[in-house]
Structures are given as C-alpha cells and as structure tokens.
Length: 61
Image (cartoon, rainbow, N blue to C red; front, side):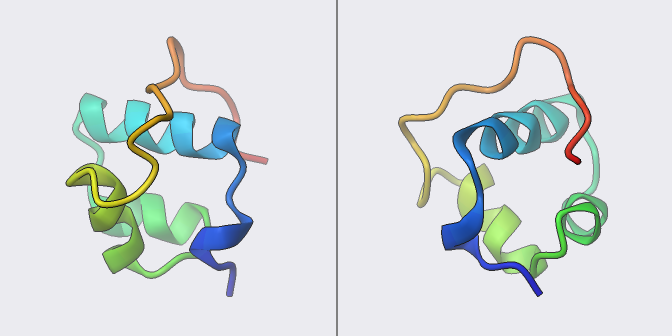
C-alpha cells in the first residue's frame, strides 16, 4: 500500500480535482492505493494545503 508521504504534488492535484468533481473518496483512495482516511485529510485541508487542484484531470499513473 502506498503512503501519503509518497504522493507527488501532481498526484495530490489530481486527487483535489477529483474531489471537486464529486468523486467518492473511497474510489479515489483505491485508484491511488491509499486508505480513504488519507483522502479525507486532503479533502479537509489537513494535508497538502499548498497544492492547488489540477486544471484538468490527468491520468494518475
């Protein structure tokens, strides 16, 4: 399983864009091999507050 510390700024931007689009946190977590709680921390601003959402969603791979 990946960890929150291994995410790149580009991946965090994609996660934020998907959250803004309304994707479910558990689906985003599965795509990035993370725990849903880590996605929640990004969504609520507890982590990566300095990374803006991506303008367009790109592939997470």
